[in-house]
Amino acid sequence: MATTALRRELEYTSPTRRRVMGIIFVAVGILIWLLFARPVGADQMTTFGMTPGGTEATVSDLMFRSKFTLNAASFLCLGLGGYQLARGFGKRTNLILGIVALMFLFGFLAWAAAGTSVNIAGLLSSSLVKAVPLTLGALSGILAERSGIVNIAIEGQMLAAAMTGCIIGSVTGNGWLGLLGSIVTGGLLGWLLGWLSIRYRTDQIVVGTVINIFATGLTSYISSKFLQTYQELNFAPIFPRIPIPLLSDIPFFGTLLFNHNIFVYLMYILLIVLNVALFSTKWGLRLRSVGEHPRAADTLGINVYRTRYMGVILSGMVAGLGGGYFTLGSVGRFDEVMTAGRGFIALAAMIFGNWMPYGTFGAGLIFGFADSLAAKLSILGVNIPSEFMLMAPYIATMVVLAGVVGNVQPPAEEGKPYIKEG
Image (cartoon, rainbow, N blue to C red; front, side):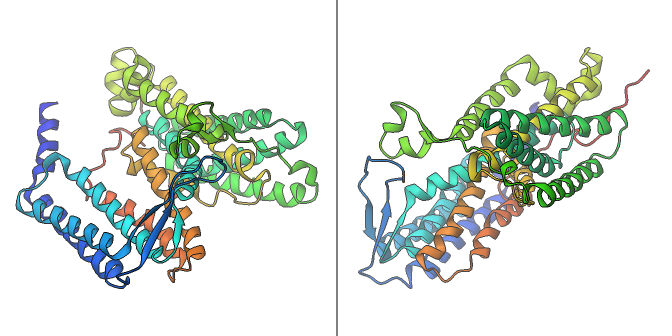
């Protein structure tokens, strides 16, 4: 433990890391001035709308001089970069990196909305909703990989669960039964992944890929053969918004956080429950131990196989919940390949968040924000192809994987089959 703590301290105070981060901060400051502040007129004003949709309560809009504010953001980043190069922020480097990233994003929005307005509250609310399936998929990955099983089948689990939930919800007219069907479908595919990976020690990447291909082919066939022909099978009920009493009345944050459908609230609950369960309970200690040191866990009497089965089945169930969002929480119908790779994006969010529930939620918000912002750009008339904005989360993920924000640390034995001795 002492060696690990020392290594982490050295990572934070490394002269090379200090210089690299300082150069990044300075570069961001120069880019804010060059790309955003310089082209803006001195008298232009930017307006940020602060009232989310779907509420009668109003919050005063935020108005400011575009050029002055952008110059201030540029100088702030330059100042932070200079201090980082001269002395360094130590353990607070990642926090400062987050502030600089927010300054760049703020500068981009201020420049894009110069002379007009953008509804920031609506953008944030949309980002939260779009982050739901990504966060649930990432939590699914955490449950499996913390137990030592690599679950790249999240995409297939979500896709199959979305179709099952839609069909059951359409036939019964009950969204809750449809949601239950989605969760069970994800759990069954999670069991299949565990059965092949744990009992037969099949390569986990291969098994996950097979499940993804199987789910894509099966759902596409059923959709084209039956759901497009018999529309009564493809008309699922959608869970309505449920404002939380008192909390939803809080100005700005109330509607932003507490005026959504059940999937958003289930995401909140899972984030808290999973974080507590993993790091504050005996169950979580056992689950993590079989992903880090299965031999030692076995020696202490922990059933490694059973614990891994439990982790991968729960992982599938959470992925099934995320799949149910696409049909029961969003559009009310199933379309071929409607998950559109979000299961794989969820895996990136899991790595971005360093296999931690709250970290993956933050990563999911970043991906969701980029998705929402791409849609806003066309409304603002910004001459930037939306595809470039969709690239931003992936670029951020590559930055993380390259070690700029610190080394990510996966479970030590993930992806490695366990063979019990004797």
